[in-house]
Length: 382
Image (cartoon, rainbow, N blue to C red; front, side, top):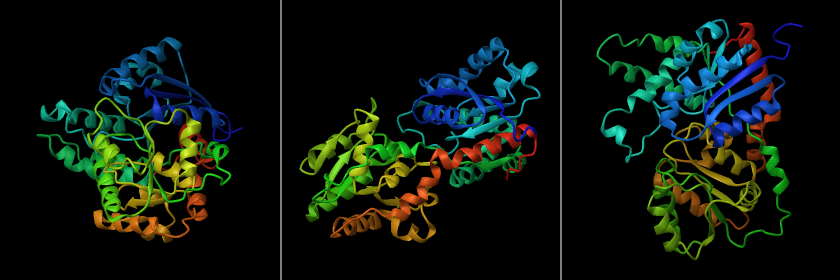
């Protein structure tokens, strides 16, 4: 049996094994035909994980005397350091780097002290050197790949000399898009029988309560609808953190009459039930390399209203981009108003079918084939 057909031994390196990173790694291991072992660290202190995670994972790798057919690392790993520390054991092992996000394009929090101290470039540089060290780069969306490659020249030209801008072409040549696999079919178990249909449209927020999701614009649009007397209900899900934007406190008071749920869902089942029950998903994020929460909501029948920027148009049939996407705040409010005022707001099965391609049952053959080709040295990337 050829190497491209046989089962491979793969070690997946994840210094930040929590949230979507953990779900992706564990579900990939469960669904792949290859044998995937996860070497991971707790998802805390992300900056320290990017600095020190490579040393700890290298130690664990060497102690185990692992000899996989392929190494698969996430973007949170300082891959160049890991390979240097394990060079006697990994010199001949192909390496793929999966980009969930990257620190070159990620919008930094305005409260982060490293920005003012001009220490923020170091994490982007680690992404850059990791990309140079890897044999293949796998991005979760075309938008992500294009954004990273597009930002690299200006980033490198900001250094005094030996900038290596010619390396951007090398990185591009070994990069490809491999979308996130998601366990979408698991959401089907919580689909409503229709007995909980809403009297008025239910608007959904199902993102983290953080600055990059742009909650100010989301709630500003709802304030305008409420002031106009447009009828709607509101379910605000998602995880809150220690430094939650103040607009959430304001919105809870101003939209008290519309709110039917506020706060993190108690379980995955509760979260899924709210997705199925909701009608409209307006998104205002200023950053998203993929948008897991958006795909989940669309799969469960929410009608999306998405900014044309970022990765979102990739999740839609080309024929529906115009009706499901907006440019600017005015178009957002107009789109919301129109959806809220429709007499019968029904889910669009075309949208659901389109995002269903991200389910692992559809994607894992692509992953397995990609890994086999990388291990065999036959991968065609860019």
